[in-house]
Amino acid sequence: MYNELIEAFLANDPEVVLISYSEDHEACFQLMDCDGYHLGKMVCKEVYTVCLTTRWDSYSEINFYTVKDLPPNLRRFQETIPDEYIIVTLNPTKLDEPGPLPVIGNNPLGYIICKSINFFEEKND
Image 1 (cartoon, rainbow, N blue to C red):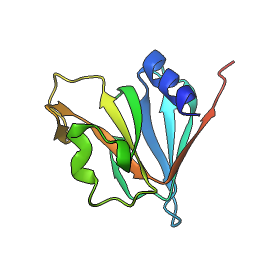
Image 2: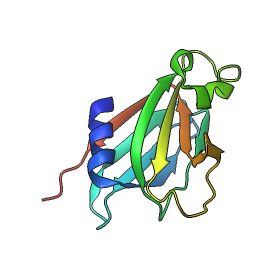
Image 3: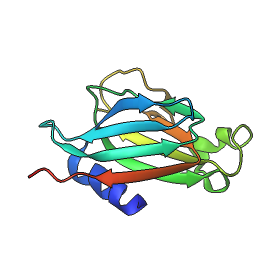
Image 4: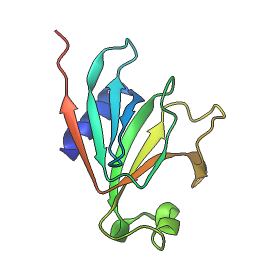
């Protein structure tokens, strides 16, 4: 399932549009390519934190980490996030333009902290 998301981001630089957030802390994001075609829905369960621009910005890369295998630039999260959560990082496509995302390791970075993530691919015929 992570591979499908990784491929969708590498091939399309999708926008990640928040379409719903429930009282059960479930976030649903619509992934769209530059022409507005729906690539699929990314559903995050038991969301702890969302730090993304959710319209008009695209992301070129997505990565997944457990609390125990964080790279050096994300280790600040180790003490505040329960072990059963994952950190999903999203690299914005436009690195040279100022934006609202936090700068982590000299680059802007979006992230989602949740217990699980699923991807439901959509076919555009």
